[in-house]
Length: 380
Image 1 (cartoon, helix red, strand yellow):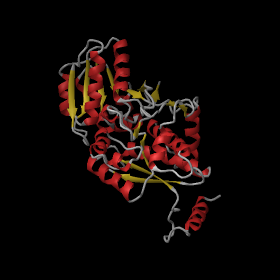
Image 2: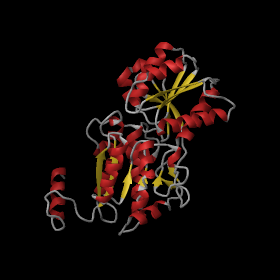
Image 3: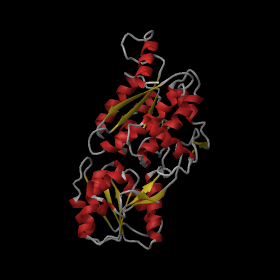
């Protein structure tokens, strides 16, 4: 059936509960998402939204959850903390979101906790796109993580580097809670092996001004550098450090898109950069959840949309949230959704298992390392 006709019929069906043409039904399930759709993290934000939306569209085509359709309300925060707070309040107070999904930035989500916004609304935030330990410890009852934390990623990265006999390791990081969380993770992983960070270099959030970081780290001539940064800053640093140093290996934590890095600095400059991953490889349909993701993307995403770890992660997050909605019953409340999510013990999404309980909201600690190949694509 033509999608426009489907939309028109849904409008007609809703006229009894709304005075506005094109409005949604009053009993739809509102899921809110704040994402950086502008600014330095815009490409990541768009993928985050796409992954969740594709899964919600798939579920709505199956009849929704207990007969109710999911309405995915998205707001742009530009990766700015004050905007994250403002937009979240809008979703909770004006849009009456039943639950939240996604959100990017350790500092951004951390400010929601500082102001007790999630706590006061008693609302769940599922699959935030951050591994910050301050969002995990101490335990927070409102956040449900489906990805490993930055400490888990740092441990995996350092373990791999030390196995390759690289022990002089530097750290380039974003000077904010996100970057400092990653820095602490690398420091802890090295200390566990009786090693210390060889050099550090910081850059300012929402910029790609990394020259000072390059100079500080190049002086120490480390064997490897762990980057706690986003797409543009990672690309700029990688190109510049290789021009002035003999550093053998660059590795970034999971919050970057390899194709975007290759686009920014070219395949030759991007080649060999390692990237930690906290989700199964989304480009090969050997795992059931990956196959489901690829099929849904083909049907519901815009034509020629490329697959990515980011859209896949939020696709998985949406699947986890929908299972929580199902278990919350036909008349869900924010409280019921939280309690339902806590029943997802060893929940198999299709080859990727999430474990939640009333005392544990860290669903996974899965980490593996990938490398950007000669054509800008990832290799395992």
